[in-house]
Image 1: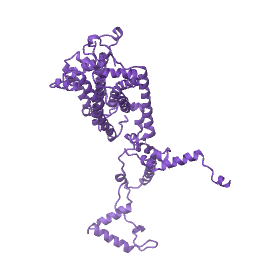
Image 2: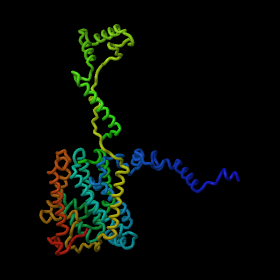
Image 3: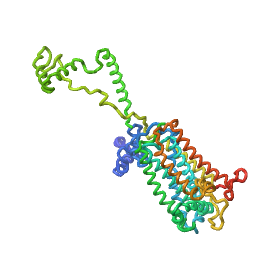
Image 4: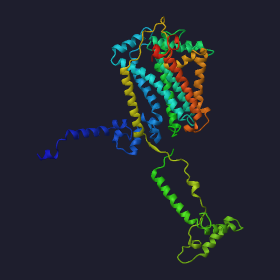
Length: 260
Length: 244
C-alpha cells in the first residue's frame, strides 16, 4: 500500500507531457526546427523571439526583421504589391486544380470546361475564383504601379526596380491574355482574334510575329496548345524570376520608400 | 538605416547637456579653446627651443624630472605635480560624428505580418464570396463561322481597340502602346527631381494623371460605349455589350 502511494500511476496529463517532451527533445524534431524556432522552446513575446519568427521561416524572411514604422501603415501602400503577389499564389493554386480537368485541344477544351462546371465538385467555384482573381490581379498590379508613381518611389535608388515592375505589369497582362483563350468559347476566340490581329501590324516582321504566336496563319488547335503552354508554364516561370528580382531589390534598395 | 537604441541616445543627450553647461561656465575665461592655458604655454615653450622639437622636449623632460622633488609629489611629476603630459587634443566632433540618422523601426512580426494576414484573408473572402455569387462567362463553343457582333478584346486591351478606330493599325496597335510602355519605363531616368514630396512634383503628378486618365477613358469608352460594329452607343439606351 505504501509502495503505491510512493509511486502513484502517472495521470494522462503527465503522460502526455512526458511524450511531448520526448518528441520535442528528439533528434528528428530538432533537425526539422532550427535553433531559436518557436517550436523548440515556445513563444514568449520578446524582441529576440519577434526576430526569430521572421528569421526561422522561409516564407516570412522575404521580410527584414524590422521595418520602418511608416511602412506598416495600410494608408501608405494599401497592401497593393503584397496583395498582387497573394493573388498570384491564389491563381497558381486554383490554376493547378483546373489543369486536372482540362485538355488544350480544339475538340476537348470547351467540353472540358463545361464538364468541370457541371460535374466536378467545386469546379465552377474554382473556375470563377481563377477568372475573377485574374481580373483582380491586373487591376491590383495596375493600382500598385499608380501608387508607387504618386509616392515618387521610383526615384533613385529604385529606378531599376521600377523597370522590373513595368516588365511584371506586361507579364501580368500577357498571362491574363493567354488565359483568356483557354475556355475556347466564342468570347475567347474572337477576343484573341482581335488582339492578335493587332500584333500582325508590328513593323517589319508583323506576319512572322503573328505566325509564331498563333502557331499557324489562323487561330486553331495549335494556337490553343501554344497559349496553354505559355499560360501554365512559360509565363509563370518568367514572372517568378522577375518577381524574385523585384522583391530582392525592394530590400536591397533600402526597403519601402518614404515617408513623404 | 542604423538604429540607435533609446538608452544610448538618452545618455548622449545627457552628456551633451553636461558639456554645454561646463563650456558655458568656462566661456567666462579669455580663450574659448578647451586646452588649459598652462598646457598651451608649456607646449609653446617646448616648441620654442631652436635645437628642434624632439631634443627640446627631451631636454625639458629631463629638466622637469631633475627639478621637482617637492613634498608629497611622486618622482617624475611635472610642474604643478602633473604625472601626465598632454600630447595632443582631439576635438570630440571629429571622431564621434554619427552619420546615420536614427530610423524609427518596428518589428515585422507582429506589426507587418498581422496587417498582411488580415489583408490576404479579406481578399480571399472577397474573391470567394464574389465567385460564389457571380459566374464566369462561358459562351457557346468557339465557332469560326459565327463572328459575334461586336467582337471585343479583353477589357485591358479595349483602349487599344478604341485607338484602332482612330488611327492606322500600326500606329494604334504597335507604335502608341510601345511608346507608352517605353515612356513608363523611362520615367525614373527622365524625372531628375529628387524630391518625393507631392508639393514638389506637381508636373510629374499631373503628367501621370493625364496618362492614366487617357487610357482609363479609352477603356471605358471601348467597354461600355461601343456596340454592334464597334459603333458608338449609350449603355443606358442600347444596353451593355461587354463581357469580362
